[in-house]
Length: 208
Image (cartoon, rainbow, N blue to C red; front, side, top):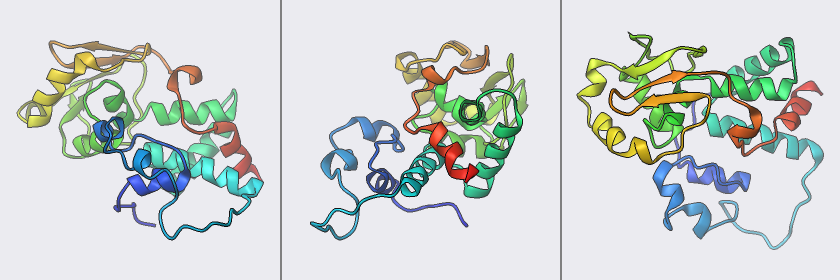
């Protein structure tokens, strides 16, 4: 299945959860979810009861939409999470958080994960001094994330440098605002991620 390229605000409304997919717009009064907090399409006065399977599917779709991951790739994350030691749901969360596009977003270089994915694709970012253009690239502890020469010449670099100081930074990352480089200090803790979905429910969905 191809990547969804329609209005992302419809995704939040369909899943009944504000996923902050549009960056700054999600914090403004123009947010579609705030103005129309109901599912898109024709409205019905009759409420339908959602089954347990439907609730599990909704949580899985929230995770996929939040991180921009396709179904086949998400299944691979699940299988790897089950194979690893520890709690499978927390393993899924950590793997999603350690994606390069998410780390770029967490460092404050981009307004949203979608924008971060595009920046990586266009070759604006580097890992340990080497250009990295694969958004799903998994960063490791002590990896350095910076900008390529092409990235520094872009308008995105100037915007990020002006705004990066005002954005929250998780404890498992460090940032040098002068050189605009970040470092991975450790692995993220589930309670710090603030996920809009329940990873345990996702494990239940795939384990049936």
